[in-house]
Image 1: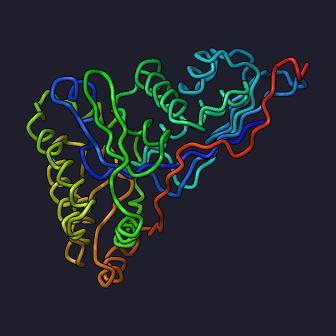
Image 2: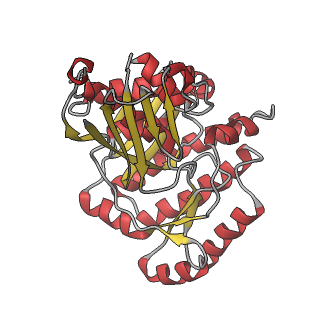
Length: 335
């Protein structure tokens, strides 16, 4: 049996520039961090006492005798890609799916990590293994499942930590942001996260936003904020980080008709009026989680302004996907 734990990510700057159709022409970069909310994947070979050979448990239960009959596209394609057979797979998470935190990609990374571990291969223990997991997760979601979206979520879930991820020429590099532990703790203490209650499929939002309008100008402007944010995190006034979040959110609002709604705009303006210096909706848009930056003395007022929304405390994490329980198995062991 294998149990993996994989973090969700919080993307601050550069979102949208991680799409190959953009970064192969213009370059791309994001600044993001993983935080201490996770998804858990348990995998073991299914004992041969049943009239089905594979069982999945997520928001529903699937039991099949042929992998091709699995309805969950990521599980079906991942099992075929890695030639996995006769499995019981269980998924659970600290936060809801379709909420702008890269949850589907965290699941993909955690599942692939578990599949390799079941075969006796630990890919979570070094950077080469984490690179392989993120590469496989990108291939799984973007190619095999044909889901629209970028690359940052799979990379963040694999590597963990507070990183700048740069994209070009169908590739990427991951560089930890140069920020001291004290400044990272201060930043963490100045951020507040709230759940809007709205969920959506990121790939659906991405497809809906492809309405033929050229968004290159806005994405280039968003890309230009990444080095500015990196400087602020290193030695600048962290209040400017909050103000820069406001700038990137107002740019992002113009990158697609499904990024925001009247309700989301109202939430944001309430946060600003209550004292937030800036903030943004996390993920592709359309719902999910808001993050605000504010000095601690304004937090109580902001939480009052967000009455009716769930406040979600969090802390940054550095580990990325990890195997928590490691007992490899082979099919021969269950015969």
